[in-house]
Image (tube, rainbow, N blue to C red):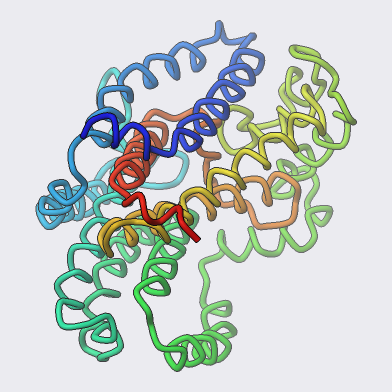
Length: 367
């Protein structure tokens, strides 16, 4: 039985994530040279902490893990409420700052939300997959995602909230939602978009305006994205070399270990390494979708597709904002950006993907 599980396991998922982590470590070593490599060593510690969670998420049957989803969801929703009463860090109440480490509940709540949506969908669709198209049942499933999304918007952290939306959309699409709901949602978005835009808070409007025209405030709100594009452009094909990036090492690129780590990599390691990162993400996300497609049951399928949605959004948004193609939201690049909560959450997701892939039936490989 163990040999069958190991044989079915999609090791490519683990390989891609480890390669991204190694690239991130190299970038962190270079970007933190003037600060004594503090964040580099912390990231190594976070990786060590992540290993037992990765192993647990891999070997404990995901059916068993899903049974605890209501409890996990309740705990993290409670923490998302409590964190709103903490002191703001960088303008947002997203963190519990506890002496030796910071804890971001919205990162871990991603997993809890995906698992609880899966748990609920499994109950809703007990009589058939089309049950999801009954309005009250669909509303119940959507509410599970809407609650943490609302709380995260209050922090405010629009980037992380958008990641939840991506995961929710991926899951309900895989659940077999009727096209009429999709078209209805698109029409509703088209109607509400101008209203929402006109009522956005000043800082959100500023980000959108700067995204459209960063040169309008080159020394203020547009500074970071301008420096980011300069860094990527300066890298050329093979980069300026580790410790040699002008924007990175002279302090023009900020924050260079989290939001703009891709820009630092582009400047010091060039287009080749930047393209390799994108390829690794594409392979990883494609494999997650394939795992969802070939899972032995709906539970495995929904968990895997939700994780694919999270990874897809983070890759597109972080790289997009670094290149000036999307608004800046403070979304980290999975496995590459510095951050303990993010790294731990991402490796738990990888463990779940390995878990689901290992329990696939042999017949799925036959066309």
